[in-house]
Length: 340
Figure 1 (tube, rainbow, N blue to C red):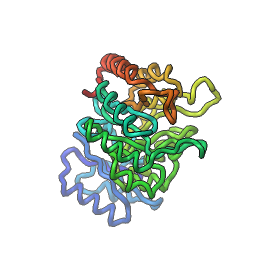
Figure 2: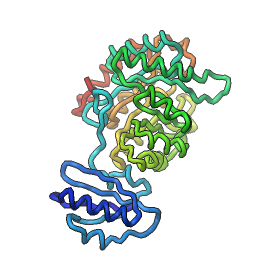
Figure 3: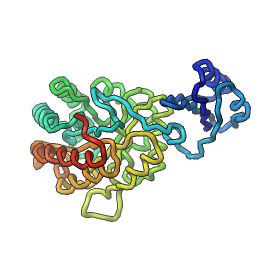
Figure 4: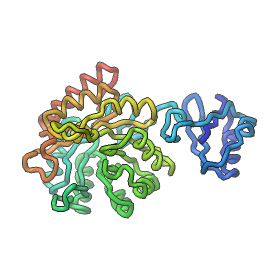
């Protein structure tokens, strides 16, 4: 891939001419327009690009190769951070986004009770699993479409957008009917058919890091989604598998800083799956804010001991409300805030 950097005062006609030149040569084009600079990404299938010819086009300042394997996700392609709106809230901006709710949608009453509680506490987006990938085939697998309908009802009552996991390409259209954000779980981070499908959907996507995945592999998975022109992608650090057994996973706080350095995409932290125990969620959540996360996704359940999945890592609503206030103070110390 090459990036064509346009001059500061390049006209729309000059930009269009560069795009037409690249497409006529059989390359795919991705346009990134910032406040001060326009970058045109030119992506091929390994064939060489005539760099000198591109540099002679009117309005072109210079042509630079992108050396990293993740092209569109890189800061080279887009130096400015990506921001976009989810409902009334901006993701990737100065304010942090809080997603909260139960691991699984278990019943209408359970979901609505939790939705109203997290909304009152300061959450912006409701999370809840309608389809649950589980290690055991005998564990609760979710309510399916019935759960999606409960999520849609909770959105109507609270005004919060909803996020839920999609597990296979054939399910994407159905989940898109009900959910505002598609979650790709850790187990599906390298399910390439699914990544293509959610990219084509043009729905916002939360991409969780695989439990044993390198940061580069994580960003390459994001590249699959971005390659379809779907720029509303969030990366999610949720801990990686190590030899440690006192926590469910090892929370890779480094990954938040590294991902934000390498990529322009917003980074969301998942302290619930990272720790696996509610006692440690607050500390990991505040560390995420300090490390530069653009938001958090936190599991909340009114009765964790009765939860059908991941009750041990779920906060009760009162504790979640307290955590939101604590995170606000950390954010303010860094000249950021929790979205209001």
